[in-house]
Amino acid sequence: MSGQKDSPHQSGGKPETLPLSKGIAYAIGQLGWATLMMIVNLQLVYFYIPPYKTESGPVIEGAETVFPIFITQASFFIVFNAIMLITGSGRIFDGITDPLIAGLSDRSRNPRGRRIPFLMYGSIPAALFCFLLFVPWVPGESIWNIVGLLVIQFFFFVSITMYVTPFFALIAELGHTPRERLNLSTYISITYALGIIIASQVPAIAGQLENALQLEAVAAFQWAIGLLAVLATIFMLVPVFIIDERRYCVAQPADIPIMQSIKECLANKNFLPYVAADFVYFGGLSIIMTGMNYYVTVLVGLEKEWVGLVMTIIVLSSFIWYPLVNILAKKFGKKAMVLLAFFIFCLPFGGIYFLGRLPIAAGAQILIVGTLASIPMAFLGVLPNAVLADIAELDALQTGKRREGMYYAARTFLQKMGQTIGLMLFA
Image (cartoon, rainbow, N blue to C red; front, side, top):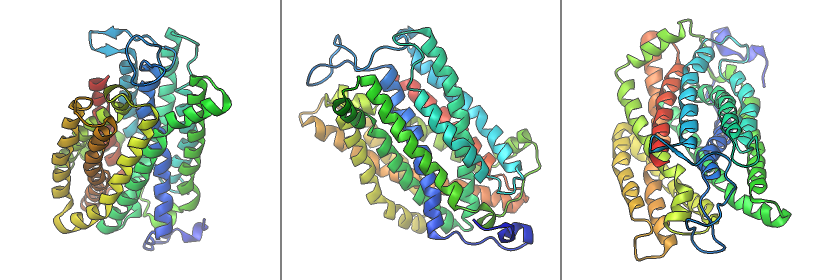
């Protein structure tokens, strides 16, 4: 990384255009944190509310569970269970920390920049606490395991937010034109999808470790998550060491108080419709992602190794649409393409109802639904980040206040509320 003389915002110069290699380095950071988040989203409910198993064939009720029971499976107020309440409270807390971290990042005067130092401090703790979420404090069912989940969740969400919120704010700062911001959004959408693939391999990796090392199911699952957490840490640190924020961003620390910044962001008439749509989308996506283990092993009765295969096919199928997303967005506009993607998203949602009911092979059923889901996932993985970067940039031009972090924090807060509601509806 270059020295202080390379800092254009201090010398009054124009920031440099981010080269492709640095754009890829930035996107690799997303690969890391997406892997951690998707491990939690895909595997936490599966680990603490394990399905039943048999020696072969589909899982059936009354058999032994895939993992031992670590927390109560009882329902509260008819529809709520312990893991739902734990994860829901974690998401709410996570959403509250978003604007706090964003405010600190927007106001930072760190000589290395407003964002990169936060990425550095958040990466290793996020990976560590992701792993510890799957290490119960007490063998067997115990209230202490619930306490442990609540405590570890607290530290995990603080750490991951410290990374993710400043990370997203960099889109508007590293991308100096709408085209550059759209390209960055495309890069990180690809690595986010790859993170889904990596996280979905936990059951398959655990199965291999269980057989090769003669491990118990829980230990094999924990080893698989630990290995992926280490890999995710390496990915998250790539932009920290590769990107010199001072060369490619104009760092103008915001001096307005956090609450005032939040109010002004929410008063932006272009921002409210955006976050409302984002809220609904992530609620639906949470239902699909959280339930994938169950759709595969319970509804269509396939082995758990199919989960990773199905998720991989979904993500690879979405890659086919990525070039088209860029072309259509530039020709017809981002808004029209987002609306089209929402309409298409209804198809896989309706298809979930028919899983296990159709007179075709089980694998074909889940793959049809997954392939349909890949189309809107491609469009909605790329375009919303680019749209928000444009909103934040326009606001900066109109007001003279650069608060990209706060815009992404407000968006992330409602995004996580959508995920929480989706999780509750599923669980």
